[in-house]
Length: 394
Figure 1 (spheres, rainbow, N blue to C red):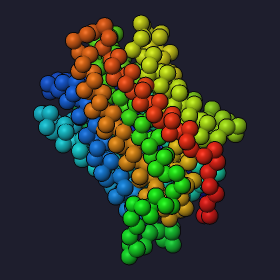
Figure 2: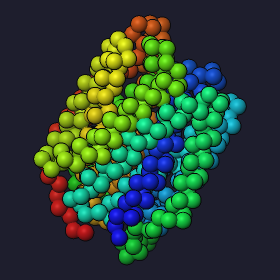
Figure 3: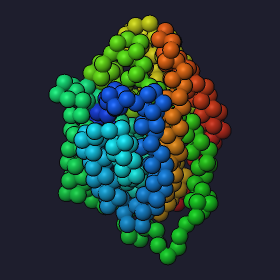
Figure 4: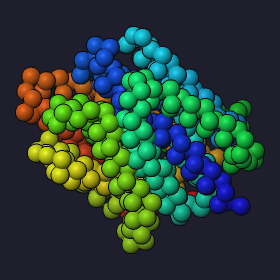
């Protein structure tokens, strides 16, 4: 009985991430048509995550009260609306409005993680969270490639297509996905929980949130600037950059869909997360030194491998740190930490990239090297985690 919901939630996340992946190589170049500078582009990318940062804990708490399915359905509808507005936008202001709407309703990934935590044993959660990572990887394979190809029709076509996917996804959730959180495990609305209470129910949750924040900040600095970096340094358009992100997705699927499960049999989540931080820092340090397609692919692969090790293990550890009644809020806080990183990262990336604008030969070096330094902080946080989680009663 458990396998079918896992397959359905994987499919839901996969479809959602295709839509997300479609936007990555297109949005910076789309915004440039509206006169957006490097700094403005950073704000445009980051405003989505700023809204997620504010809404994440509220959506997590709501899912603990009413169940995962209604929140997931609501978030997918909001995503569809945001994409349609983005495609129809005529000014930069409407692009920002679309990103704000999408960000406020964007609790789909955290809710999916809480759903998986509901139906899997604690010791299996890091492996199951790898399914989310594999869906990310597949989304990065198909999404950017589709987005790049759709630009042949118009620069706004990828956003309309992503909106249609989100609407279809909402129908799939409404029609086929069962609720995972039984009524006896839901939060009693008469007993509100403060942030301190949530933190008490999650061992080392602040440390996990800090590690997530710094690692995602560094990674998002790369994804924010990557299309502009490849355009300036190598002359790539949205289609070619889409293929590069598809390559990142292939690495992610291989790592999280198979290799991570095997590695978890021999090493702790702490060791794997720390290794991922090292690989991420190394890849970000080397990316600006790329001299051609071969080295660019090589260094991008190192970044992809590092990210594939970090995020599933941190989310798995977070889900193990709380019992079922607190899953939505704990994972919501983790998403907020990540969303804060995806807000700070793009802003820093845009600001630092503007410093390189007058120097084509080093374009991208400043933000990528700053991101590598931030990953060293994430590594320090990961090394402070305990080797084994505290066992919890289900």
